[in-house]
Image 1 (cartoon, rainbow, N blue to C red):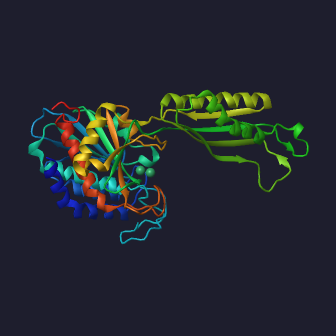
Image 2 (tube, rainbow, N blue to C red):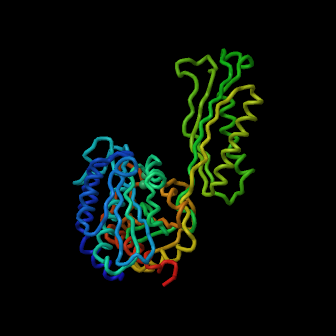
Image 3 (cartoon, rainbow, N blue to C red):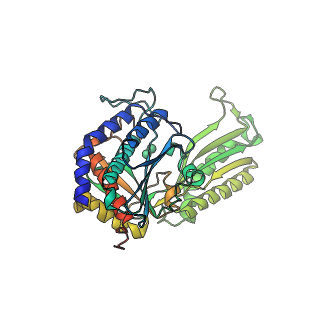
Length: 404
Ligand SMILES: [Zn+2]
Ligand SMILES: [Zn+2]
């Protein structure tokens, strides 16, 4: 099977590159992606036997469903995100973004192209597998939307029920032709917070007659990292980052202002730790404001979920990817990182594995995700499409869990 898949992937490679570069020209943001929808829809309609559902996720989502020779088989979901970013493209190429101020700087154009490739491959081999494969093209990943609507309102995990799900990201630190797979957490859970401290404004010469909100905010800011190292195990990845702080007026140098607001991101791999960070921030804010005599407003969101790889599927996914790329090119990543991914909505509901597909040509340093100079290596599209196709095939046939 792997040879047939590789052969088709090689044959359709030029088409996939064309699709990726066309999508790259028209980067769109959020949930409504009309041009992106048009291109993906056009390509899906070329695939024989594919059932197509359009305008999903409350906008421009698409789902294609392929059914194998017989129903007796598993149902696999393969997902690509398809939205872009509000970034002005600085990388010069013949297919540069035609929309000012927008760019596929996270490479989701590549994700869409390799998933179209996987659908083309599996459609050609439809007589050779059983079960059902759902190809999900999800908008809104960058704004944390899309997945929940598809799952909760459009029930894409049901009818037939999805047994396992896979997704991948083109990854600038992994060499092209290789795949890295996280041992446990592919992405962390993301939370956010906003604290507004209200003191008592007054003349800066007599601070004792004011309640200084900047000083209280600063105390929380300074103290939180050490609170977290004392209250949460040192082996737990965690982040508390303040990303804005607003107080006073730069033109007024002699008044202590009435209020100070700051906010940012909190992250962890384990959702219990995320909740605990939120709780420690609440306690710290309460204590500091109590001592200062200030009032506070606090918003904390700790509902984020992490993308956790299924430990049972992991080995089968490593084996499957190795069949396409070679054993020496697939490795386990032991170190967690705390980026976020909307795929958490899938992986928290069905056993899933997330792959980091290399897009870094050997000996070359390339800019990171979301950089205006970000670039995607088109040479990896065929391998990625073939990997997804074999994951779909092995998953459907029950080979991933060693049931065959
Ligand atoms: Zn991104
Ligand atoms: Zn991304």
